Image 1 (cartoon, rainbow, N blue to C red):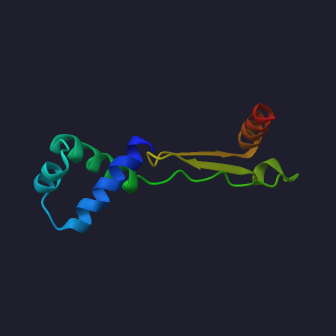
Image 2: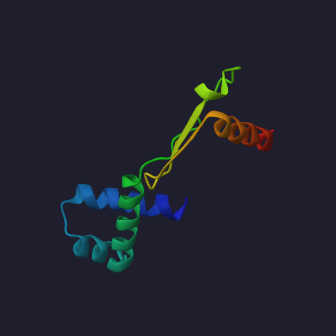
Length: 98
């Protein structure tokens, strides 16, 4: 059992117990500070947006003027390439993947 699973189990038991964290930890011999640290860590992990999977692309022979690539990072920064620059960037990425 991983540490994450171990603490997730205790946190679930505490949520169902109706006891305060202090009471729950004292009864089970758990360090309250460690319990609280893991609870915060697991709550943050659940709140973190999941990474988006790769989206399959279909490459076709389109005029360079019509081509555009836009990438949005987690920081909400957007990168947009159009025309010939977009085609060169895409060719470079595909070449590195292969």
